[in-house]
Length: 204
Image 1 (cartoon, helix red, strand yellow):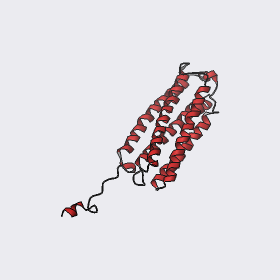
Image 2 (cartoon, rainbow, N blue to C red):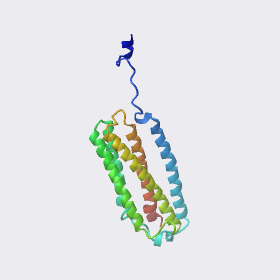
Image 3 (cartoon, rainbow, N blue to C red):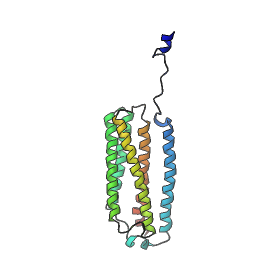
Image 4 (cartoon, rainbow, N blue to C red):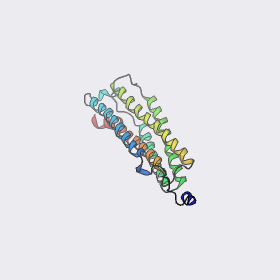
């Protein structure tokens, strides 16, 4: 009787943890996306609120911002999302090499974005204390940069866990959750780029 009870074949299988969209982390990251997305919406609304009050002279030196660094940096961030799609697909298909390559490439491209953004900031001839435009520019882009750095930390963690073999096609929720957050950061930057770099060409 005792042997029958302790027979491993008769014991119920323990769950492997949250899978895909069934875990609390999945809903948690979407709550984060909703709240942070609303905050960015308020910040960008502030830009347009001030922009409609003034003419082109509101811009630094009365000139539209240069896209010499911002445009390539935007492309880099888009490519990082594309790479992460392959990383997420790799873990769900049991392809560890594709998983690691995708996450690793997304992390490297994210670091490149941060470096280029630093040079973009350094090239500005105004600061957050110069005027309302400078304050909004550095607040919004700085806040976005904080999210990018946080996302890099998440990608680094998921990469190490993948390297250690913690994930499988069934247990891949952390990779999916990290992907949602990173794609959110990328989408937010597209709105930031459109606001500060593209809209002046249309408004004035």
